Length: 253
Image (cartoon, rainbow, N blue to C red):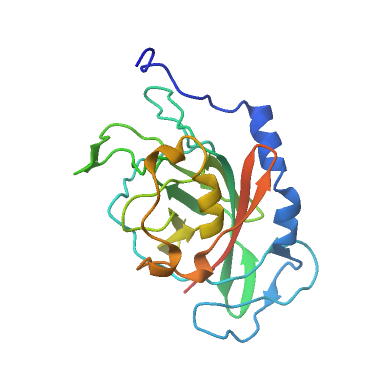
């Protein structure tokens, strides 16, 4: 194939990234509840709680389940919002654009407040189901660092990424891995889990290039051994791809 060593795609400029991320503003506000702090109502299960509104804007206080890290975690320490490229080559992974925002809260003493300064780290496979910087029976990408990175939550507990809609690989539903590191002078904690996508949406996305060339996937959410409906993303269509927000409250000791 001619010119197969040239970068594919490009990194968004600051203006373009802001335009894409701005698409999610209404969704972010819809996913937030008012209040400098909010009292938790009794949870129906140990893994879910909701907050009562007062005044101001804070992320909804929702405690999510922690699940397995999986085999492809690598501590790359890449602080970046646009995670699509491999830093060493500049090559950008092809795929449907996805703006993903985390609203992170801390749940403590029966109240919910935004968590500033937490390190939110994500990683996932490309459109062909391949992860970067790992040696696997099906591929070897050691030294590459595409689709990995972290952001630090701001004063509102928010961290936003520009990435692509993840592809799939055999035996797993479509997903994104994430960790939230919270280090303070008093304690250090890491929350590890995964995000999932609606199967009907994935079916639509995978009819497009470059996903379509991989063929039909073999695992839906309903048969995935890790899937949990509390980890299902609410994804909306945007002008330049897709946008999603994820509200999560971390139980603090």
